[in-house]
Length: 288
Image 1: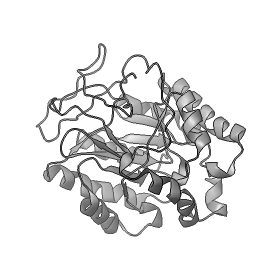
Image 2: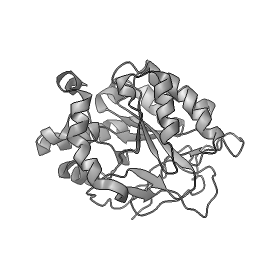
Image 3: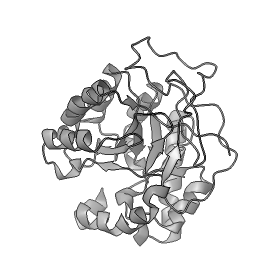
Image 4: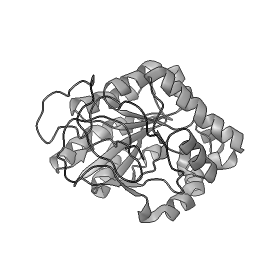
């Protein structure tokens, strides 16, 4: 990430803090229907209004039979078609809701062949799905890993092409960063991403508008693992376990630096979350 050499992660996060603070508790979306039990469904996104967990669409692979605890709430294949219209938001979604003790795991900046395969392996071992917000330049360099994400039921989101601070770019550059990434994901996976995350959590009006025009909803996070500070795998895992709550969206990284601690931490906190009765799921959007 070029900007990382020019601007500290701390400074960038401060630049985006006002946007996240303004969202507050309003950034909550119901991703799962409270009347449905965890089952195999279709991986995708959710609108800001509501979403559910439908049965597997035709042609989707059924997940391996497993215990209730390890059953994925969302399934393997992207749903056919796309929402007819995506509303322009003025804040990102910060958490999810609608089905008890459910959390969403998200990974930013990849794919990176040094760390992404290890993250995928751990998720696969627990039959868990996550969201990967990929950078376009990384997706172009490692298309096989992006395809693997989709094939294994994960949601691939848009994290811009080169991870810039969008609030410092002209409008044309903001759109270019987002559009190029959506195009490379579509060429690689067969469908454009339905979710977008602004680098450093620095959102502005252009990001929301262009995201909506490209068919994407904005997703932020509830729990920042602070793995980019490399505080140690134990500290990262402890932060997730201490801050996990129903509806939490957890931010981690599978690229953008040395992410070996992130990989090790995932191996620690994921089974513990499952033991505590959490369901780890990916959101699905409904047409609006």
